[in-house]
Amino acid sequence: MKILFLNGPNLNLLGQREPAVYGRTTLAEIEARVRKRAAEVTAAIEFRQTNLEGELINWIQGAKGAFDVIVLNAAAYTHTSVALRDAVAAVGVPTIEIHLSNTHAREEFRHKSLIAPVCRGQIAGFGAMSYVLAVDAAINLG
Image 1 (cartoon, rainbow, N blue to C red):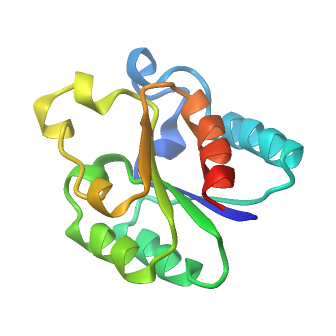
Image 2 (spheres, helix red, strand yellow):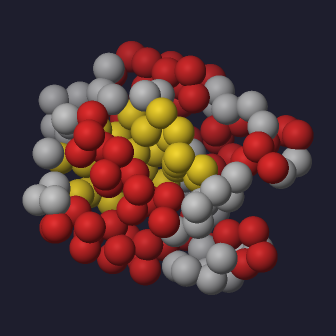
Image 3 (cartoon, rainbow, N blue to C red):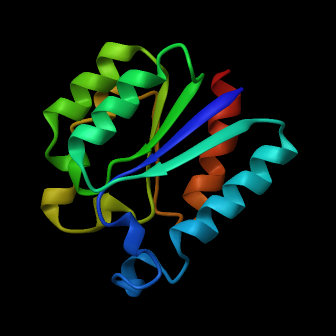
């Protein structure tokens, strides 16, 4: 099982950005937790972050045939990017949408995900644990 974790804009600032909302755990610490869980279930992980929408799209397109599952935290692009939604739909790689915070308990503009309708499922509101839960969800898709 090969799982591609994609992280969108501002997630490189985790640990220092709005800790009351996103916690104090850094993206590197989250990646370490994901790798630990993946090793326990013998899954291969690739972990990437970018602030660029086009780079996320290129990575999604490149996942076809290379990965079994995509785990996508599109961050703010979740609510704005038709292009990301179309890329997920086009490649046909099962995709899990994840968020650190419960987007439905936040500002109204965060309640609507443009990518959710083309994803297999959504994990939100469990902080860094959302990522670890995504490993298990991905394994269960395979």
